[in-house]
Image 1 (cartoon, rainbow, N blue to C red):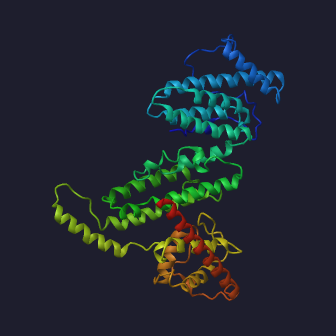
Image 2 (tube, one colour):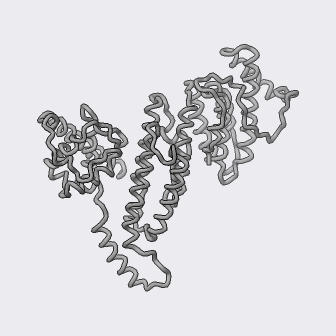
Image 3 (cartoon, one colour):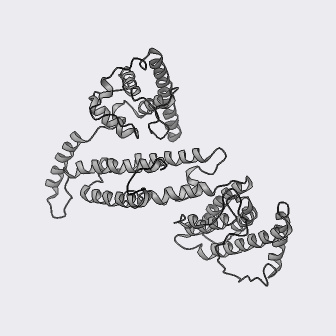
Length: 441
């Protein structure tokens, strides 16, 4: 894949302190072997390019350093040019080439503005490639290179974010059979924010990673497998989850399984997801047996339907099942996010200081019986909320719902909640209708 642990081994000082010509370059040579003696004087084209790059580098570097940067730029470009031609027809062409380009970019240092001329020449080369039946490949590489080029012009210092993304990618349990197809989708750095880093700092970038993690875990799980009829051997999946969880613990946790306050939120999300998945599939495995080839087809179908009905009776309710529609469920969470003193963040992580807000919030939702349709017990609601809101940890007996919060429980708070809920639910539904309209065209 395009992402490899080489990014951690790349010895670059942050904030542009490394000299752009001191970092080891990933070499590849196909059409000529440049040497200290003849490069860049090996041919007229390379010499002319060298002079042009040196003139550019002289604007911000002394003469000797400009010469070194020009040599490195041209060598990186020549190596990449050969590497692209050599790998263009391979099955994993995009992963290999994008990996090679990325390594060369960061070999100029953490502030990738020094890679500007390398990228501009590379962009021109890719757009000139004329290989039959490969034009779509050229377009894809051109798009990727242009994104890097745009960020180099604005002198983005992307190394620390790139390393943070690499740690996330290699910690995520893509080895699970029902997640493995996602690996290709999420293996490229720019996929997380499209291509614009303008408004990002370290904190907001990590928030984006946490949001992406939450979205993947929410949409890809054993509950959805069951609903799609794909959880035919839950015992096998349970073993796979337990094995993957153990690998995750050994690779990602500190002090032999001890949580660390410095851990990124996405690690806590993944740990909780593992626990919830194993608990769910444990219930399922007691009710569904693996399908065997020699069983009677009719009897098997009848048995499966009976067990499916039993399973539906014991499967825990989801947060969304308490609402009339998805828009109302989303709006209810917006209330906790948008209060003057927020209770959860965008990743549904509890950030408040008083859990007494939760029963007041539930009471407010019950005043909208056309939207909040739940008739669950306090214990059941407690279990659902503890699963939905990370680090909420309502007490085992749901005692929070039976306490009085006189200083907190005010008309002003209820009015604030209702205002947010009404506006957010209307906005969500309007957005849904708009989206349906677009899809229907």
